[in-house]
Length: 312
Image (tube, rainbow, N blue to C red; front, side, top):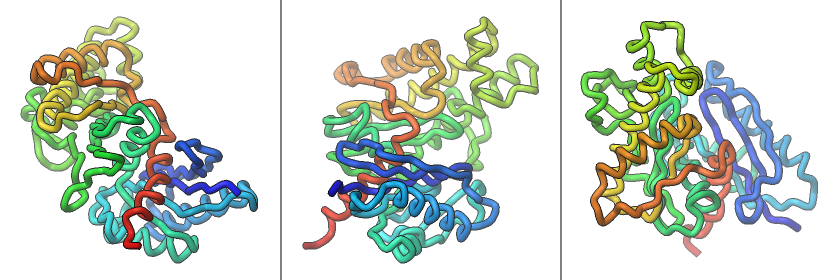
């Protein structure tokens, strides 16, 4: 009999579920659009349906030890309740995800923030495997991450740890942030922010996709190239500061912008090198390795981590 765990990556637009075996190997996957507009009940119905579908495919030779969920929003890891969420999941705040899924699936369930799950997957079975302390930074629609120490995510007192997009950035001074503040890293280093900078520089208001900005940069558009470099530079400066503050063994960079190409990476690395202390100049900064499976793998790992922390 093969022992596995279920990993769920629950986002505002898509829910992906994987059956994960030893070493973080994903044995099967299913996914569906997240019915966010229909409310928390419909969202959890989708998770249950996907898990059952995956188990039906797996057959009787698979023993599932539990289900881990990486969910959008700030999660109270102790209770598995959503402490705070954005409008991408209306009504999600206050949802008792762990208790509902435990009852409906008939197995142990653990819940964390989706970015924390992503970081845990990379730290345990991806680019950070065997590194005691891993700093994960992800830049895409937003900017977030986590610190993983000895295979455990540092979630903080309220589960908010890792909101790196909401630290101040020199490059973002005066720019409005999605949180309602201004001058934060996310206002300059995220995909939407990179698009906004490009529109300002070029006067082309029709560009709303960061991939198009990257494509134009590769084709020689100087405004696009400058926008890509600025996003990379801002993120790199913050990473350098985080390395100084946290002294991790390794930094992993992921998210959609990690595929923006060498100009973005060069700007990031140059800025990080200029910011961090000389003694920390050898701290590796590497690309994430697991791609879309990272949060699934990290969520599944929660099952054994949570079990090991329970009183005997």
